[in-house]
Every structure is written in structure tokens, then in C-alpha cells.
Image 1 (cartoon, rainbow, N blue to C red):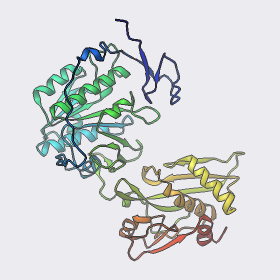
Image 2: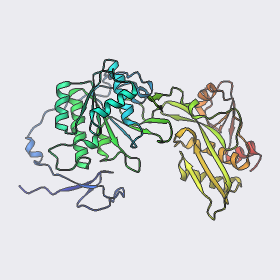
Image 3: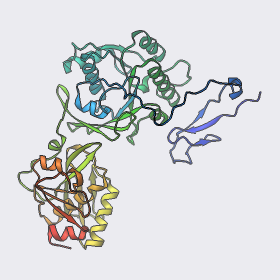
Image 4: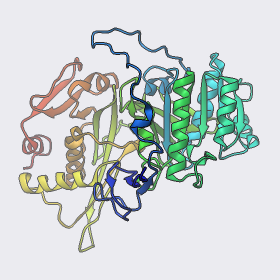
Length: 438
């Protein structure tokens, strides 16, 4: 039998190539193409007949999967209501952001509720993990701890112990003796993830894998790992900032893009039950350049403050510094203000920031960004009791004491009882109403 020709696959987008090359033609990624080993036997080796696959119809009803609550409401919210047995969860985040601290606290919380939990560390010795547990006050929690990187030994231990939850920290440190590659390589990460996910489905054990991220903010390793697991969570935040956000970007058992908010303290991560109040600075005295945006994160309305500073520039090309927003979108808003509203920003430095370390990606924030920019440029404060573009999020704003809302014409206005709602036809009308210009 002739030998099968090797194939080459891009780990970023999955595009197949006939030969290795430095740059993927499908997605443009560099050094992302790896050789895939061919099958040792073709389909004919499977035999003439296989087994019938059981089929059902769309009307078949099944009971929802049982869930185990951790007692950490923010974590349970992101998971879709709790931990599902036999599920595989991938948690990614920057180095030092607090992934191990979060998962050690989660393991202790699950264990205190009767969920058998095993914590395997491939990056730290058991003594180091115990020191962290002592600092967090978790030494009395019935969590079983191990330090190992050999996946064969880890799977043997899981088979014998049969915990309800196993945490692997991290997948990049695991290695299989059947794969001839260094730990952390594409082949090792993919093979290790496949073995762990398969074990989780076969034995009914929930698996949480910790993953490192690249400088672009994506989980390191082949993208196929994110397709293998049921849930992908990102732990976000700035190291110098005390707030952390756990975001679900994929969840087969709950809503995607749900967030949980935590605050890093000396005793570990503390839950934040009302993030809207946390992300708003003092609103007693109105200040130019500040606008409050009512956004939606998953199923939760979250109010955030957008802060702008506009100042004369001494540079030939004025600076445009944006934190927490898409800089390209901000440039578009500035162009619209200049071209359609007649408000020039030439010769002015522009600085924009989202308070609290939040990142806003909703297009609905455009009006709040424009309001903050105009407020800073004209040195006119927006009323402190006003939110910009709230739509069906007015209930959260009303709960926090806001009494006015400005939003585009045709938006839904339900939920904000007692609030004065103004709808604007376009940005020019907003500029004339708020700042007497345009």
C-alpha cells in the first residue's frame, strides 16, 4: 500500500496546505502551519459495516443537565448557573492576572459544598500552592492537591480517584510520552487537551484547563483546543488595577459573553455584586469630559463611565490615545463630528479611557463617546444624572439614581420608570441640544 502524503494545517484557522510555508494564505498568520501525521489505516480497515448511530428527532425532550453551584455567584453566573458534570472548561488570561488564585478559591468553594475536587499543578510545587492557600485562608478546605506534568500519571490518578472536578494548571505544561515534541508545543497541547476532554466525557468528570495567552491576547496553542472544550473563559484586567473580569466567550451550557466581576484584595479575589456602582466614579460634582454609558454584558446591564480629555497639541500630528475602546471606531466618531457637525478636532490631543479597567465593544457606546469628547472640548459638563443610549437598560440606571437618558430615535425605552427620556434624530441634533453648537 502506498504511503499517505503528509498534510499541513494552520493552527489558527484550520486551512489545509499541500506543503509547509511560513505564512498561512487563509488567515495571514505567521509560523502557524504544522504537519499533520497521516492515518495509519484508511477507512477500509474499519470493516465493511459499522454500528448504527442512534437517531432522534428535534421534538425529543431531555432533562437539563444537573449543575453544581460553587457558592461564588459571579463564577456560577459566567458558567451559566453552575458546573455541569462531564464538561470541559478552558480558562485563559495574562500571566500574573490571578487565574491560579481564582481557580484555587473556586476549588475550595466547590469542595466545601461536597464536590470532590482535585487540583493538579504543572507550574508550581505543592508547597507553593499550599502557601497560596494559606494566604487565602483555604487550608481547611477538602481539596486534594498534586504537582505533575506527565499526563499518563495524571490520567491514572484521575481514574483511581474519580473526582467530580479536576483542575489542570496549566495545559501548556502537560506532556504525553507518545508525542515526540516539547511540552507547550502545538502537538503536545492538542494531544493533551484531547486526552483530557475525552476522559471528562467518558468518566463524567468536569475538567478545568488553564491556558496561557499570547501577546495578541489569544489563548496560546492550536485553536482546535477551543473547539474541543464546552466553555472558554477569559480572565481580563490590568495588573496595576484591582478589578478583574471573567468573561465567557463560548459556552455550550449558558449564554456567551456573560461576565463576572471580581476585585483583587490582600485575601484573594472578592466578588463584586454590583459592578455598575463599582465602575462609576463619584458623580456628586459634574466634570467636563465624563459620560455614563449603559451597556449590556451577556444578560447583565452594566453602567460604565467614559472619560475624555481634549487639549491643544504642540505636535504636528496630534495624539489619539484610547484605553478600553476600539481606536478605529473612535477615529470614525471624530471624523463624523468634524464632517457632519462642523466641530474640528485638528490640532487637539484626544485621550479616551473607560473607567474601572472595563473594555467596551458595543456600537451602542458611540453616542456616549461622542458626548464625552464634546463635553471635554467645549468644557461643558454633562448632567451627572444622565446616561447616554440606554435602550432597554434604563432599569439599571434608574436603580443607581439616574433621572435622564438620551438615546437615538426609535430605541426601546421600557424599564426606566420616572426617567426623563430624550430621543435624538441624529448626532447633529444631539450636539445642538446638549452643547448649543452644530
